[in-house]
Length: 141
Image: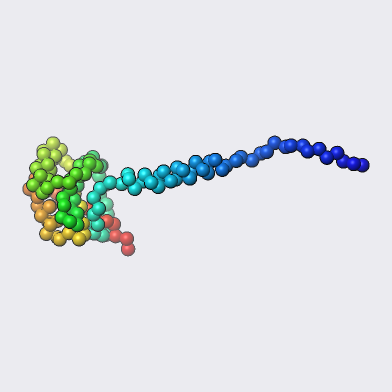
């Protein structure tokens, strides 16, 4: 008996994922390009310290920074700007008059002489900051 060989087409139960992979790769490239642009700030190499972090709200923190070249920066609520030392003292005084409970922190590059960091701390205390904290990197040992 001869069998009847008919080409019966069955519905294909597979999903073509190639277009999804293409879209995924395009999104990956977009994120890889834009991610470094989202990071802003001063390049400061912080010293390592074995200390527990302080939990603060970002809006209640004032950060004065000094980079390896001796340039001063003031970061209030995520907005960082380059500023001179005398201007820094005036701005900090005004900010502390408006919000006396704001935390004042110092970010000093590890290559900056100790005297420059102390000078920045003295300037901040002269502006009315009762307590000045130091920002460090966590110890990775």
